[in-house]
Image (cartoon, rainbow, N blue to C red):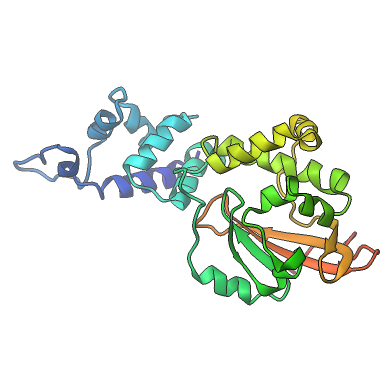
Length: 273
């Protein structure tokens, strides 16, 4: 627990909330009054035992339940990055999921210009793998230059995807399907992901590897065989990142080299000098 940072974050955000906005009368009379909600008022609003919030803000609540942290974050109007900071300060770990289920569904429009400026194939999907932005280079990867609306559905369920993703049964499905399971663990109410899971479980080719429950957190740095619609067979290396304002969204840069020979089997790690 980082008590100093936790206390600073919570005090700052608590001070921004006017008691009157939640039906409390501001105290009158002599003496200095702190701005914002009182700790006692926070407990009342969260329906917690008196003293609960004081323990959290003072840093004397080790292993505070994430339900309490989530309630405090929503009351204080934290954004997703502040939510991440709250969990790191209070629990020394990443949050179990986004603060709001709507998070990760949109990105600033300038990202399209950023993606257009990438020489390699590149795209951005939201937390449900719905396509948000892609560059011209990516379109050539798909038959007829038709980019799918949901890249997860294309990878695991679309016959065209299974053809283009060479050695699909061994090089793609066992790595992609665990990502769907992991996404659902943090977004259990996501209707798009739930529908894809339903279709995956109904397909014998995907149900077994999905039920295996293997762990595969991300494809960053992976090199896999790919049949490019215009350049033919080759190997694609995936570089992944996440727009910080959209937890669960992902930027994918695909470095493709045609031919039977792998290009980056032992690419050196980059380190600062």
